Length: 220
Image (tube, rainbow, N blue to C red; front, side, top):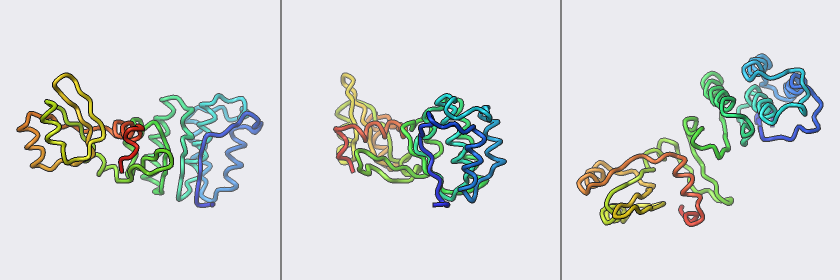
């Protein structure tokens, strides 16, 4: 357990310890903890060090949680939406620190999130979970190649995507837009162009939304 740091959204409503006190206590139980780095983060997040935890806003409490997780520098650092209470500028600081830490103190970061569009630039590997089932587990590079939108006349889209994994379809009059989990080959792209079809990349957020829809929950 000393090699694992698990940060999650905590209830500090009864916690009388100050920010500094709580962080120094965390240092005692984490062999890789860097107190100097924790102090730098407290300054960067502009935290009131002497204020009791229970008197902090939800966002500030989340900041303390992620500071402990980052400064612990455990070989396996898990963040289970512990940053969800932070506002957008604070989350951006967190993302920057994750990247910096990964480069200067390499370790495994596991990030659980519903804020997919904000965090997709951080991922090397992606796992989609839906109702206890693993929907997809692939590298970010592989998913980026596979997730595509195909748009054009309905009959042409249906013909081109007939033998491929289609996750979603939307009609707009005579046209159809399909979301596919399929990496088009050069020949397939040429065929699509000849059929008047447009192929564009789909975001990880698009893929996440459609794969976890009830009607798509059977997709393997």
